Amino acid sequence: MASTTPSGRNESGLPRLLSVVSMGVVLLLLAPTPTPATPFDLSRVISTLADNVIDRLYNEGEMNLLGHYCTYKRQPYFHRWELFYRAQATCPGWSTSVGKSINHRNPNSAEREATRNLVQQIVAEGLVAKEEAKEWL
Image (cartoon, rainbow, N blue to C red; front, side):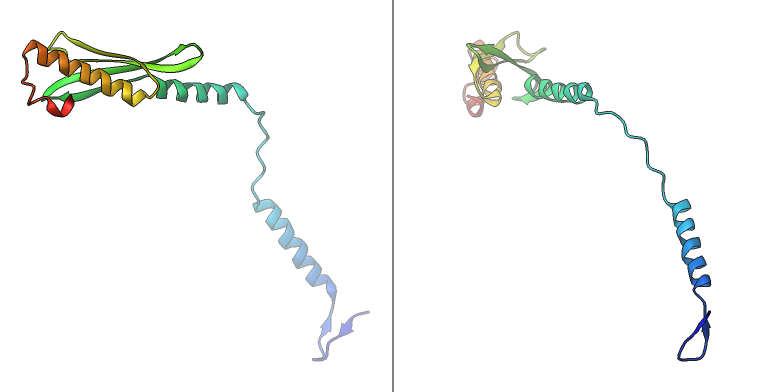
């Protein structure tokens, strides 16, 4: 039997139930469907990690040294189970000298020392005055 409210309206629970059910159906139809789960690909994670580590260990680049185009190259190596770096710096087209450094634990120190070694050789060749190269020595 239907109940009456204090205002005198006759309330039935059926219209309210239908509206709740229809709203639920609409929400279910509009909700995005879940994507199927994919297995965890450990080989892809390891590959990405290895590529990142290798890119950071091996480094090649260009620099402007005393107004000339120069390049540097850094690479790691292991000695007695410790990681060390060696580096080379060259200025093709300006000098045939090759600045080298080895046995550095810090990669930036290896590059800096190779550049310093190259500048010392260039000064010894007489291509630049020692005063001009002072900031690189």
